[in-house]
Image 1 (cartoon, rainbow, N blue to C red):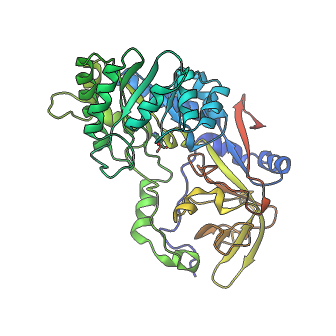
Image 2 (spheres, rainbow, N blue to C red):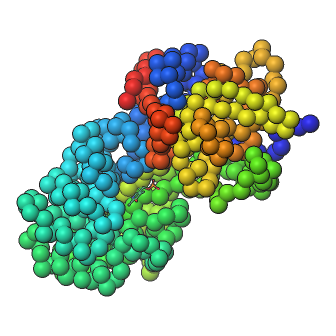
Image 3 (cartoon, rainbow, N blue to C red):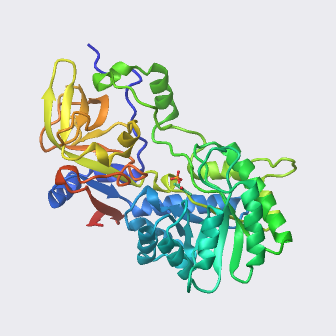
Length: 448
Ligand SMILES: *Cc1c(COP(=O)(O)O)cnc(C)c1O
């Protein structure tokens, strides 16, 4: 019987540092012994590499601007630290996120504060620290202005309700924008109106390009009203390629419920392959034609001297981390096996959204050349008492039976999978975080 049907494997695209760490004979074993439970491994240098490719895409298009890391995608302190070293900023949406960014070297002026109906504490801290505040409603603008001792001037963007997503609960309608602009003019002794922002769900280039062009037009009009309107912010939502186009295409083409424990069905899956992705997607936005032409978005920005701000979260974390769950046990059943790991499905966020994180987990230590290959198919359960606590419902192919003491590695988890929805269910501690750097061929690791 062929255990692995075609289309059921989704090997992750791993950057070089991951292969270095996972092929090292002892490093993962040492970390596992030190932390005594599940853990996340991250590589700040790879984050810097991703950040530089976004900065490079802007420079190549001749566009001036700034990148703000969308902090909600991962809580580790190494990312804002890397942003600080690169003179980039951070996008925060809560007072604790703001404080954490400051504590890790981000200056207040390099913060953008997003999110709906912000708390008074968040608005006040943002104003005190001279952060850029994306205003999401008229009453929020009034609450900001009314804050006692908020500092001298406040810096704001006006968040626009995008026509591409007219039912969104975020952003201001045209009528609200008209009134907000009027208030900005009245209050120009107090407010620096720096421009407009949007954030779109989905990963399409064209609605972003269209909306960017529209925001530049809005800036030009706002300048005629005497406002600064120097910048547009196009949010995040830059795609990530977890697997190759071929693997993803064949997975979708052959998809079958029988690939999953209990034939479980899902509401849908994240698109694990997309084109263009990451900084290439930014380049595609910038080289999109403007309507009416001639020229592209990059030219429109430079001709109007408009700065481009962006807030990538997931894309900056692409390839920046993986998650390791120690194997507690394995049960062989006639059709397929059950792996139980030390950890919870609540650490892999997709399960919260009636979905599944699909890139293949890998068994460590890997099969040695001399080991016999005896493949199994197995699903992966967490160490709780819930039938539904499954990290992976899919029956994934492994080259041998897992054993207690092995490690099960989930690839490319830094963007949203690690800590956005984790839980201390059963009083189990959440996974520890470890950062690695590779210096002169040596792998160094430290607890975060
Ligand atoms: C979540 C969010 C981001 C980051 O989105 P990614 O898809 O991770 O790039 C950026 N801006 C805003 C306003 C957000 O809510």
